Length: 183
Image 1 (tube, rainbow, N blue to C red):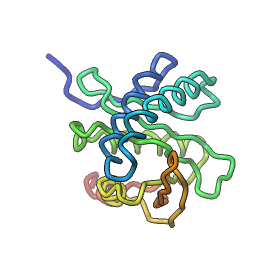
Image 2: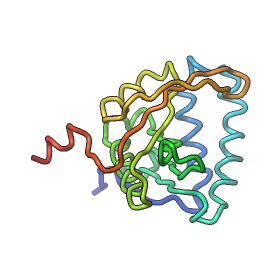
Image 3: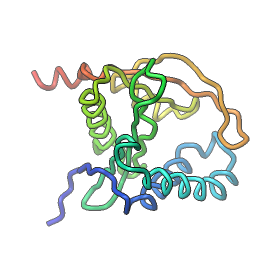
Image 4: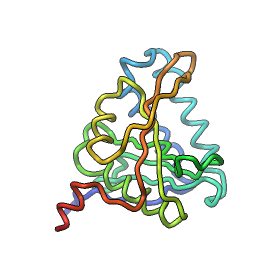
């Protein structure tokens, strides 16, 4: 019998290609109307492969936390978080991606809680992340799960100007819905 629960595991040095594939597929799905198609299909796969190979080659203590979510033993998402040099907002949840077919199974919530626990254990009381304006599904997900809007920042992805919404959350307070479910 196949286990149908979402399970999390720490990524290892053998996982860069898997993470890059998940990252690229997620971007192609979520950003299809935000970023140019040629960039998403030609440059992004190479950029993600290079980034994750380099990132995962770092010693574990220098790369923060990287988790892979699996369903029935197959990778369906990943998250990465790290402490930043400027601690104004705490730990950066840099990536949280779940394949569209597995959204709604709880992988995103599990990864957020695992990152919150890691951040709290690391002595951090807050976390933050960025979501592209126009990524409505992600914005709705984070707001439903207790993240608070904290401003806008402009930047570029490739040559495309983008605007990100910054969100913050405390690492020690459970989401209101979670607290009610426990009572």
